[in-house]
Length: 163
Length: 433
Image (cartoon, rainbow over all chains, first blue to last red):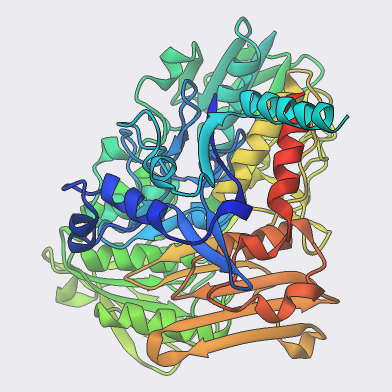
């Protein structure tokens, strides 16, 4: 199962991911349109002592936001692993239990609809908009196992090269 | 294996769903007094206000039971458990056998001993029948008085207000939401509610409830009178009492199960009787902050307990970590608020209190610490990252290094573990190996 992974050292806080996210979730699918429509990004580029720190949902295996949702709106798709409060028969009512439950602060409020706002991993795209837009390769979309293998291989090559 | 679950709300449904995930073959039966598909009690205000229809109150897809191959006995009332014979006896006389039993019977509204309540009639809000009764009464007039300014009372008041009723709330404590919010937070929330025309009488006892008298009894416009301690008389077609609940423990009385206020369970959600488990509002478990046994009557806790009970019932031992008994999120009109743990404490309790208060922006944030460990929090107006603080309460982590940052609006998860990201990736890799 693919995940959005982050290499924080490579992030320079350019906000391209946030803009791409808002654009993707707007009607017009453009950055300007997103601003005019008041669409907020679902990836939060915050900072830690001045260093950029993007925060995005990890789509937890045993997601606290899903357990907390008293409307049944927040669900984890068993096939894709995506956790979202959108697109289900059970509608989000904006009770904010999920905001209280999320230890990462990855859920925000959508002021337009007064519902919870979070990453839905761009269901219409093969690669999520934030990942596709990142000019620094800080964000990548991959299977954790594949990523781990690649890292190990790279590390192995490095060691061999030195050796 | 025969699993029997009594109760079809948060804990019961989560347990049934989890059991089915763990065991494709077992017989799973959900028994409930209410002859309804699973619906969320927390959504009843949305039903009262007219925002959601009856059908929209479900928190699982309409064919949940069928899809999960779960048998149902709805509209059936369990009256007695025979732990020796491993049977539950129904009101109809029928006996239902079980190998593992989960008691997720929830709680009921309590009726306060208010003078005259017997004459006016007690109306609480706990289930769909209550809601239907209230909606029916709404037809006879548009004035409502809600006695009790806790979460349930205020959510109900706001729902009736949105429905177009003239609503007053009477609260005995000095301010609304006294169990979870301090006076400063309550003032912001009360002002927000008043914007919508709701009247709030706090710090006021209800002296008497009087039914319509004389000619006032006649016709559809009959008004009750709610007399407050200072002599104020409020007229109401509808008097609602939202002053608290009590756990439904009766089913296990006489079985030998230990019962305090709620059914006592251990960290495996087992009662003191073999093969009987309890979860949700009916049970009592260890509170994270106080370390004492207590009720933990909120939806997220019920779900976690139901899930944990299911694992243990299925023979997969799993402990529930201590839960935050007091935690709640709310938004009545347009001010969101979250409170958790020892949120109402002050310096007089020997605790360290950090606050930021911006009255003009309707923002208030408070963090309660004991020896650098967060014990409670209140976020009003701006609730972003409230979950990060709540998680620190759950972890009972030492926050001395970040204490000065906790109340910053820019405080975020990234401050918790510097260099955390690399470590996390390494951990993920380690897991993947």
